[in-house]
Image (tube, rainbow over all chains, first blue to last red; front, side, top):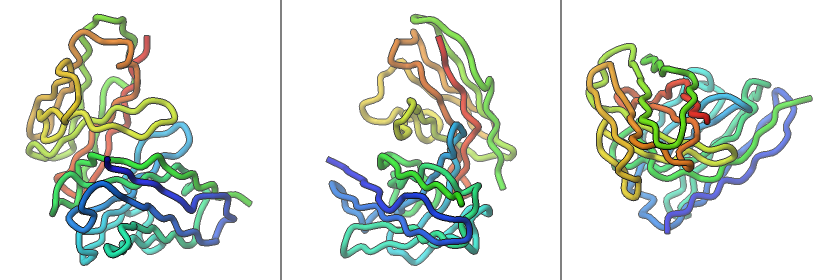
Length: 122
Length: 105
């Protein structure tokens, strides 16, 4: 069955960096775009970033552009999110999500991980 | 950027009720609209995509309609398992979510 497992979350000071990983199994990873979506405590869902199936195209939400970087390793079925210059407003549960389609850049997202909590605090 | 507006932000309903949630896009998104259900502490679950296509395994009491800028999620005969928060999401231009609708007893 399809599984997405995030890791790498934790408590980090403002201005520091963190790298999230998402290990996937159960589907052909290299054939689908992959996304990061976050949810601040008690708030709604916010799309963060997408990487195309082959890693050649990457797009970001304005709120993270220039600070976050999405990437993937198709040989290891793993998705990454490098987060730099972290701010308090980046505190959230971060979900990785699989794109239903091969070439879409916006979803929909048919499978999600369980999420990993990132807390930015001094 | 495309903005998604959901209404109402919350609603109270009873088991067996028919529930309708609306979602409006700030510009036309054709049928690039999905609906998700989220329960506390859980990841969202895809219910509807392409405005009206039911995701595999989702009960038929869920249905979606609309195109352009105005969309609707309908739950016929609300079940106890349906009390949750629902989000719409556009995929016409990257991705953006609505603010959510909490369905409460």
